[in-house]
Structures are given as C-alpha cells and as structure tokens.
Length: 579
Image (cartoon, rainbow, N blue to C red; front, side):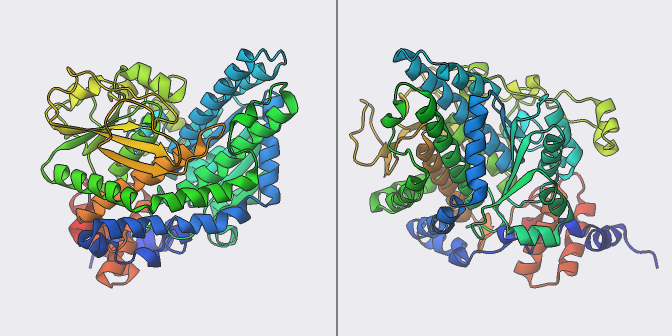
C-alpha cells in the first residue's frame, strides 16, 4: 500500500532532520512559574502580570555570575580597544536577536555621538570625540533577511548559513573588527553562518547564547563546529525557560540586552577614563560593571509596585477590548520608537497576527498593534531610529541560485529599501490605519526625551487618545501633559540609557503577552497560534501538540504534516486549528 505523502514527509522530518528537534533546549521547555498562566490571567490580570514578571527574577540570579568571567572581561576589553583603534563593531542575530542587534547598533551610535558632543562642548581638544564618532559611524546590526525583517519575518532564511555569510560579506569587514553573534537557542543556522564568515575575515568574534554550552556541543553539530572553531569566544548566558515556552523574545533577549548593554556601557566608561580630559562619565549613576546586578534587581522590584501592576493591567484589558472589537491600537513614540516597534512586530510571528500594512497592499488586514512616529515621515523616522537609512537586500534569482537555494530563487522575496519604506512607520501611518484604529497610546519617557504628539489632523478619526508615561523613581516628572497611565520605575542613568530600554522591553513584552493570554492565544504557557514557517517552528508545533494532546512525538508529527499537506498555502495558526 502506498504511503501517504504527508506521512512520508513526517517520517523524513523525524528520522533525517534531527538537528531541528530542539525540545531538549532549556529555552524550549515549560517554566514551572507559569504553568497555569492562561487560567490565572483570565481570572486576575494583575496576578497574571505578577507571574510573567516573576520569571525575570531568573535573570537576576544568573547575571552576576555571567559578568564575572574571563570571556566577559575579554569582550569588554575588546570593545574598549576597538574604539581606540578605529575598528568596527558588528552585532548579528535572527528574529528577536536580529532586532536586538539593530537596537544595540542604534544605542551605541546615539550614545557615542552624545558623548562626543559633550566632549566638544566642554572644549576637549583630544582625539577622543573623533574616535567616538568613527565608532558610531562604523557600528552595524545585522538581522537575518535585512532590515525588512524588522517589520515582517522573512520566512525560511534562518535555516541557511549561506544567508548569514552573504550579509556579512556585504559589509566588507576587515581584520580586527569586532563581531558579536547572538542566538538565544545557540543553534540558528543563519547566525552561525555569519559568525563563520566573520572569523574567516579575521574579525575578533564572539558567540553569545542562552542554552548550556555542553548541551549545544553534545546535541547540535552546527553549534559544536562553531564553538570549537579556533578564534571563536563562546559566551553562555543561560537563564532558564521562558515565561511562555519557547518565546525567546522574552527573558532570553532581555538577558542578552542586559549583558551586552552593560558591557558596552562599561567599555565606553573605561575608554573615557583613559582618553578624556573631561570626566563626562561622572554624569552617570552607573559606571562600574559591579553596579549592574543591583540596578537590575531594583528595576524588577519597582515593577512590583501595586500602582504599576494596576496600570499595566488596565492597558492589557484596554487592548483586549479593542482587539475583540476588531480594532487596531496605535502606539506613538519618539526615542523609544524602535523598542515599541520591535514588540509590535514580534507579535506577528509569535501569535500569528497580521503584519504591518504596506502601501503595496493597502487592503490587507490591519495589524492589531502598530508603532508610529508622532510627527515625522517614514524616511525621517527610520533615520532617527537607526541613525542611518534602513538596509534592504537587493538579492536576485542569480544570487539565490549561486547560494544553492533553488526554492527561494524560484520566487525571491522583495526585501529592498523601497519595500521597507512601503510600511509606513511615520505620520503617514495614521492615514493608513484610519479605518481600523480606534485607540492611540502616546509613549513618553520624560527623563530621556521630550514628548511629541501627533497633530489633530492626523488623529481626528481616533476615538481614544491616552498618554502612557514611564517615570524614573524619585525624580519629579517634567512636562505639562496629562498622564492617563503611569509606571514609576528604577531607571539609573548610564551612557546608553540602558535601563530605560530594558524597562521598555519588559513592560511591552508583558503587555503584549498578557493581552494574548487573556484572549486565549496561549494555553497553559504554550503559544498555540504557531505558524510552522521553518523547521524550528515545525518541531515546536509538534511538541506543543504532543504535550497538550498527550500523544507521542510521532503521532503529533503526523497530525502536523497532514494539516500542512491539506492547507499548504495557509499555515497560519496551524497548531491552534489542530487543538
């Protein structure tokens, strides 16, 4: 009897693609704190928020040990040396870590320019300001698929090392440049490929990941090969399971932002201490690496304030009502646009939601949430967010064939700069979403940036407008605007304003995840609106089905592949359909 095609595909995946079976990874397992998250948050939004925030305490436990290592010291000294010697700093990641790579690029560029401005205004006649400006100009964050992937996932790209290699080649790196590859799981093929290419270019290369190094060495061949490559410095910053199983955009990426951000800031301080006539570093509350664990603990503690929990709960319930009514919630932000933008775009692959709308497809479904600059146009907004124009990929069929990816060569995705600009993240977006948007939330960080608001003509169709203010503890709030929602957090000042960005990440991860949990898009602590668009997500889909339906991995694989064959053109929310 002939075996059905779906069964053959499932058996092939089970027997021949074991490198994508990742259930043994810590980042893919279920966290005991949040086992009943779906039930708890539906009963009490505040209690569900406390569950989500409690998992961040895992980061606080392991972070002090992570910064007291030889590898950390080497990375910090390498960063400091790169400024002195005019070498470039490159971050590389995919998905959440790709967005992190671009955020780190932006923070480094803006921080270096701000410090250079301070030195020059103080009449510092040394070359220090020039070196800072050179470092700001040379820094770059790579996201697999190019900057279009900041807006909308580029399907399947993470499965190919050659794509990571090609993106590095296009940067024309030199020997001595610093390359920091970041992968939450430690197994992402495109990121591994980028690190191999950097090593071959003679870059001082680091590989940062959130699963135990011994596990990666023993279980995943591609990870072991990279870790054992001469010249590579591997850095294990394992934190534990995620608050939502497999959702590495949460604690894993928060740990990476805290770890790498603290190193970047202290490297800057060390550089300034040794090369500046003006002690501008004394303007900051955080100047030593040892200050960061206490500061992070203080931030987590401040989240626990009853008024903070109540305000976060109010926003979650507001979003839930709007989404259930088929409405779009718009966020407007200035200096934190990239942070909020990242959270809204990450919701698309995580919960199978519609992506941002392109002007090439003006009738496509609107996103549930979108982030916009309140006053600037899209091109200006990108320039302000990144400090440069967005980097698209202009790869044609010939290149995909050369890279031995014939399936993608047959239908190359459009990833160039024109495509990126078609997604309106500036004031034009208010018009693009005017039919669906009923709520606007202005995000204000008064300690870091001046508040700006869209003019009335942009938002005349929006029914509800709120100001959401993130205020530093112990400091008076500046500004004459009203505060409809406010959280008061411990936000010490530092060269890159790191803790304000960590706070934004934790805050909006909690809001978006809490909203999805209340809406039934999480079961237990599993994401069930999974779209198996790559092999890693096929494996995760199988494991979720296996766990929640109490069947074997093979039985679950048969269910998944049978559904893929039944609806090959629509894989969205496949797991939820099967459940």
